[in-house]
Image 1: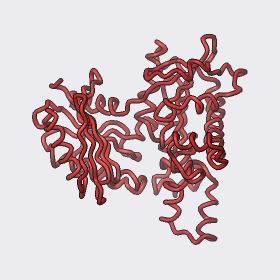
Image 2 (image 1 turned 30 degrees about the vertical axis):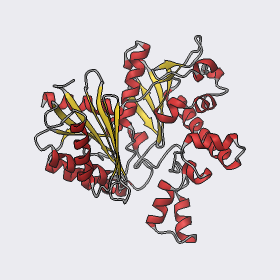
Image 3 (image 1 turned 90 degrees about the horizontal axis):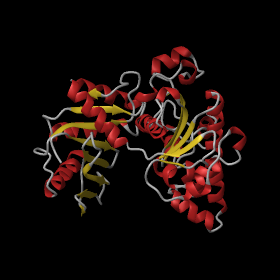
Image 4 (image 1 turned 180 degrees about the vertical axis):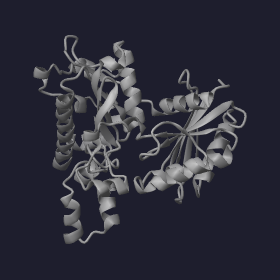
Length: 399
């Protein structure tokens, strides 16, 4: 493998995920995860050619983490300075109103992404650190930022507008941006391929259910609504995020519990959702607790599914019916109970799940609705890394 490889980097606040892959075939040459950056017990796990290298080491910053990853590439026969890397694609969470398509990164673009940190304080600063580190280590390779919000940039005005003072909203960039756009775009395109139909002929709902979770409504291949908003906090119940709630709760907590902004931020982003209700945010552990009769875990699951069905109903009405409903990401792809419970009792709408198809252990795109169902229910694995790699390759080849 070589000659047209793209390195995809996803930088978090204390971690870096990466893949080296061929954007045409999707073949992965190597992949890894750097964890606990800036903490005492840093670690890296790097997999290439069927073998995995692990190391426990203090990793002071993102540059050190990426330098360590590059050493592992070289140790496994993929020296990045000689491997034919044509571009580096970076996942960037928030593009605001400024960025809504893949963008070549220079100093000006990097500064603009940093300025958008006010809209994504948990994400954009880490994205900036990762990009800056790679620019230092691979200065001659084009860097491309691919934005999570880009796919939803063109939402209809009625869907993207919050009902607050219009001047305040305009002054502070307040609108519904949507997130997980790279996944929703990739999966909805794969749905069209699977059904052998042009995207413009399909109205569909896509559930991206991982630790972060969102749902989108697409009419003819174009998004018309999505559950996340100004930030990734709005919408579905998630692993550690609350999703939708009465904004008065924030005022109530500040007045009666004397929480400051940072305290409320931590509560809603890191101490809510499944973790807040059941004490765990791993779905496998949640299911284990439910099996053991844990009432809090049962309630957390019921609240989770209730919110999924709430958005499903809203989007069915908004679209006037759908051709396909698709589940993707970690929970969506691997938890048949969530899929079955979300769509239970909807046969009058032409929506049903075949039990045998739903519980079959397959990793490829597949149909889980009965053969005669009016609405196609699908499970389609997402591949955000491949989507980012292709976007980066396309842009650098035409630039």
